[in-house]
Image (cartoon, rainbow, N blue to C red; front, side, top):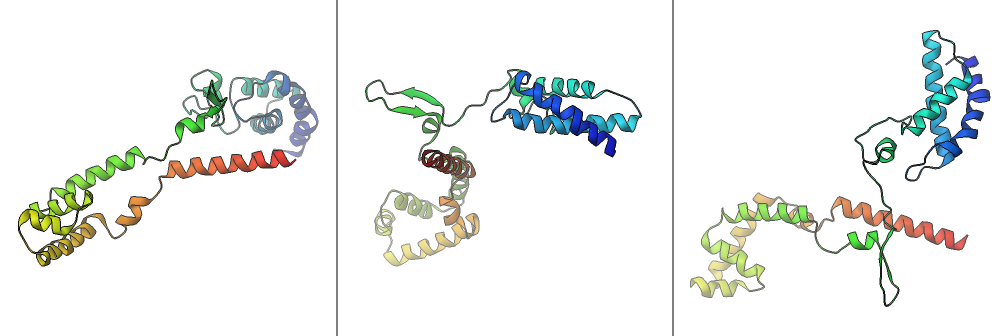
Length: 226
């Protein structure tokens, strides 16, 4: 962009955008009018650059007008996707709608306690995808074990001891210790050395949700102290 085009953008286009955008452009999600003005400035700068490269002459009013039309239709300087659920265009045409995790979804009719969307989504159960993947792995692993080794896994999972398995199959404790060591080797070979860490690792979506809650709590504390 030439210095002259930059001057037109700064002194003639941006003032028009600042005047019109708060009144005519719909804000989506966390957008505010100042953010839309910044986004519109980037769009207008690109328009001016393209016009200058094409050797055409346009007025600052035309640049401002078509920039505002872009914003009103949902276009942004970062793109104009109609399939991205987070995109402004997708939300403005009604295809998707975003909700805050702090949105109230229910209220206790007796105690007056409110329930937010994050309360509905949060629970202490394991991630279903992790549970399903672990079951697939365990079923495949059990198919490779002998009958006694499967009994060892079954009894220990139920809170019983190796001695209970020994009584069930009629062998001594030393023999069961041999099966226990053999089973441990097979588990490491099949599951990997980090199997215990993987079994207690928190899923990524849960970490992100907890971080968002902590950030929101910090913002609320700052507002309360302000």
